[in-house]
Amino acid sequence: MNQIEKTLYIVRHGQTDLNKQGIVQGRGRDTDLNDEGRRQANQFFEAYKNVPFDKIYISELKRTQQSIQQFIDLGIPFEKLEGLDELAWGVHEGQPATPETKAAFLDLMRNWLDGNLDVKFDGGESPNEVKTRQLEALDIIMSHPEEKTVLVCMHGRALRLLMCILTEQPLTKMDTFPHQNLVLYKVAYNGSKFEIVEANNAKHLIND
Image (spheres, rainbow, N blue to C red):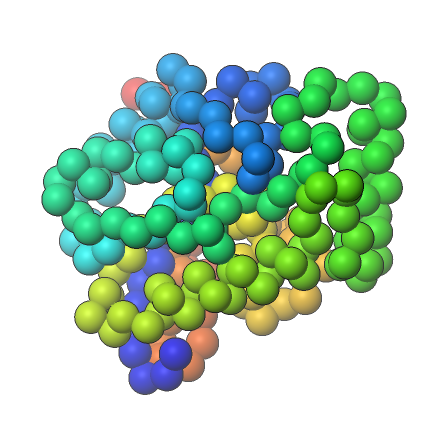
């Protein structure tokens, strides 16, 4: 990853019904955007359709492709990378929030912030496991020096972990990167390191 310059426009996918209901989706729930999510996708497209993207990278979950489909329709090449998938929450994916599940999530988050980054739910993934596949995805994205301006669409928790990787911070700092549906992180690579140019940018989502 040396001696190339690249700008990454990294967005979280648009809203789904499970997002709206506050239900965790994760890697195992291949949900569609809802009406609000499609509206957010259109707002993002209108704001950034003139950016000369060389390539688009998305996860293998359809909500990411639906979020940037209008850019694909312009003829911009795209590639699906499993490394960009959301963290798998295992047995808790798609389950309604109860006092018990909320307590389980709080306990898990506490473990992660304390540095216990191999802890995970049954059937789920740990932050360290997600980091391994994200590094593989990043190697692919950065192995194309001809792709100077790149659009990446991914997922909330995964985005937080990726930001830690790009800024060379421990994964315990994941919660210092706020996000919402279809918010933008613009990251520049100068040949040796990544720098966040715009963080949590939601200007394009402001209603007219």
